[in-house]
Image 1 (cartoon, rainbow, N blue to C red):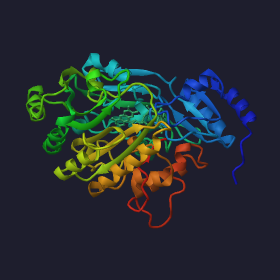
Image 2 (cartoon, rainbow, N blue to C red; image 1 turned 60 degrees about the vertical axis):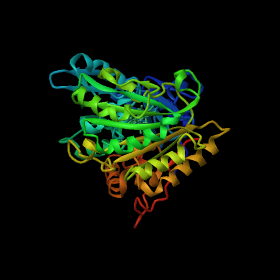
Image 3 (tube, protein in one colour; image 1 turned 90 degrees about the vertical axis):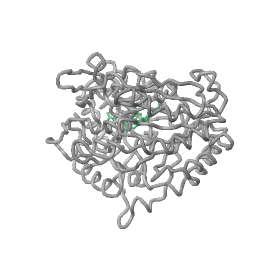
Image 4 (spheres, helix red, strand yellow; image 1 turned 180 degrees about the vertical axis):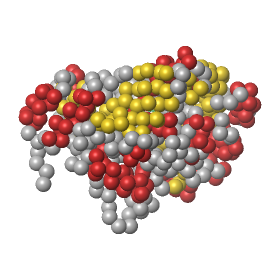
Length: 477
Ligand SMILES: Cc1cc2nc3c(=O)[nH]c(=O)nc-3n(C[C@H](O)[C@H](O)[C@H](O)COP(=O)(O)OP(=O)(O)OC[C@H]3O[C@@H](n4cnc5c(N)ncnc54)[C@H](O)[C@@H]3O)c2cc1C
């Protein structure tokens, strides 16, 4: 039987254990519970603004003693639960960052964003493997794998982690690496916040001072030809190239260039890590389809990698839908055009198909929990989640999921599918991964103090497999 916590006693105990506690109604609480997806509003009992790893450990211990579950947030780019009735540990104060250019390793606090690491590594010609948006948090992204713009060359961000400092649900600060607590090391690289609150990590950097990268945009009449060409072209792309295609319907709003606003367009995103002349030659197949609206692909310092996706910086309410595909062949391209091409009636602002494969398929430092490494294609649709149209957007997203069913493979990537519960866990970790995560979680968090641990606690017994779990791929609003 669970007993409702005595919140006054809890707040007192927290205040005695850590220096910065924010309660509902305070400015600090509002700031630290803010999210990038405005559809998910966080309402925890209290927020601990951690300044040290010891703060995190103390907060987890106090919460455990009072029967209060603990969630974690850094930048708010990936909220998956409201945290009602929970304690939120905010890590943005853990902002330590050191780059060692000789060993090519960065030591990174849990509150650091990729943009800061990119900036610190750049003078040494080094690059951290970030995702599409440098504003995202390092730990949040790589605990979910981290499929970035150079993924097909260098693999996933998680594969570059040498060690984690992590507070487990029993309130103990531990180190996890290939040789220390290897079960935690296995589960933190892809298991999101299931096993602990990471306080810092050591990340290997790659030598990539410059990259031939950017995006080429085409207007509505050219969308069909570009999508069809890209479907063939991306199959043949060597691993030095990473690419995606996004059919966009961008509204006229701040941050959207006027020539892209209020029309259907398609953006081919491309990053090439090899000889730029070869990358340019390869991209000719795309550039020659039609005259681009905008062409931003050029040799750039890695520090400009965010331009490949040009993700919006400002928070918005979003309905997000993600699925994996076995193939994206000519028939799939035609189907995508029927579903979201210039003639289609869709409410999605963006539907992106990313080419995976290459180095993504091979774990670099031993096995990790991250599943679906062999998936070759991933789809992400984003629509506006404002109450007036959210139902329409969700129905439209289901139409797209159904339409792509012949090419779908079961499962999802945790970073693109911010759900919760046992069905979610089976979908993103697979049955073996979810059950092993549960075992590790029981070892380090026997009382299930971490909110993330609860996703693997109530896994169905028996023959449930990822393929039989009913799929709810449309999230938000
Ligand atoms: C604009 C945008 C672009 C994106 N592009 C990509 C991409 O290219 N590739 C990709 O793989 N993903 C991408 N993502 C998804 C992103 O990686 C996840 O949403 C990630 O969880 C965000 O991490 P955060 O720390 O910034 O967000 P937060 O909301 O602060 O954290 C999200 C979750 O990360 C986990 N987490 C955060 N900090 C810790 C910690 N200290 N210890 C343990 N767990 C922690 C927790 O589960 C937490 O709930 C993108 C998201 C956005 C919004």
